[in-house]
Amino acid sequence: MRLRGALALLLLLCIHGGRQGAAAGRDGFVRVQGTRFVLNGNPFFANGFNAYWLMSLGADPAQRGKVTSALGQAAAAGLSVGRTWAFSDGGGNAALQYSPGRYNENTFQGLDFVLSEARKHGIKMILSLVNSYDSFGGRKQYVQWAREQGQSIGSDDEFFTNPVVKGFYKNHIKTVLTRVNTITGVAYKDDPTIMAWELMNEPRCPSDLSGRTLQSWIAEMAAHVKSIDGAHLLEAGLEGFYGASTPSRATAANPSGYQLGADFVANNRAPGIDFATVHAYPDQWLPGLDAPSQLRFLGAWLDAHVADARGALRMPLLVAEFGRSRRDPGISGDQQRDAVFGTVYGRVYESARAGGPAAGALFWQLLAEGMDSYGDGYEVVLGQASSTAGVIAKQSRRLQGLARAFARASKHKQGHTGKGGN
View: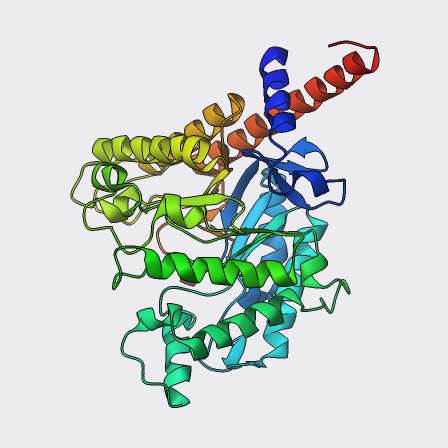
């Protein structure tokens, strides 16, 4: 990046103090300044991965090596952020939360291990606090727990409104945030290894397409998180579907049939939400289209969200999940998957280079060797030579180059100002 571009980005960061800019310091926490992430005063770009399985394997001494291996390979590829589950509700001995307020200490120690290993490898973590879906319990399990205590609940969407259910979830938030890591001795709420909390993986409330139910829940839970932990960033976990606040976007940008009670613009404006997220699965959302048409949709989908993060929201945007299944009929090799990765990475890089809000992308999903049973068609094993691994490493190098250019520009400006320059 030319020095002039880096100086422009520096000015943008300085002008927009951001929601946490004044408290930034050099404490190792990722902060927000304007539309950018900042770490220790320098821009922070999140080229990263999803690995939902880390806690469960971390809890098994026989499997812990896979956690260490995956994080080591990620760090070697230049990946800076991982996203994983801090939930596993009901469902037997491997659960994190057996029943409301009752936790499996062994599973919790698995998450302790994950954070300890991530810290060693210089990887920041995003921890999601509950699932929208039934896997790992999710809101369905919370609703069932409330029914077992005498609550009359019709739909799982009452997760967002029932006072007893909300109390269960608030207790889980407090339990996770105040957890003291048994390996590092650091409370989660004080641990800079954690980049951000996520309220829910892909929240949806199809019973209220106005978006008001989900909006109220996000605002309430964001306030609860911030009352316990003011150091970390917070995001809602949204997929990026548009809603009633932007009807033209909902019509033009959403894939058909995907207006599900979420509202990308309104939900991210809720007090306490620090950055926006978007997911991208054109192969799932538009299975009837050919690969070139899916790529065109992907480009337009990302362009719309970058524009709205810059204009309507004025906050960073993270592509928190994206991928392309290799199990689809007609897929051979990595070519079509690489095209999806290339489209996402290209949009992120061009926005970042221009001082825009796109701050990174996390692919779904990272596995270590020997985890074939976890494969879902989207898996990437960095230890196995593939063209996709090369695409990922190249993006890391490009974003690291932007960060270095910005750091040089910052030093140049500070030196110039120190000599009385304008």
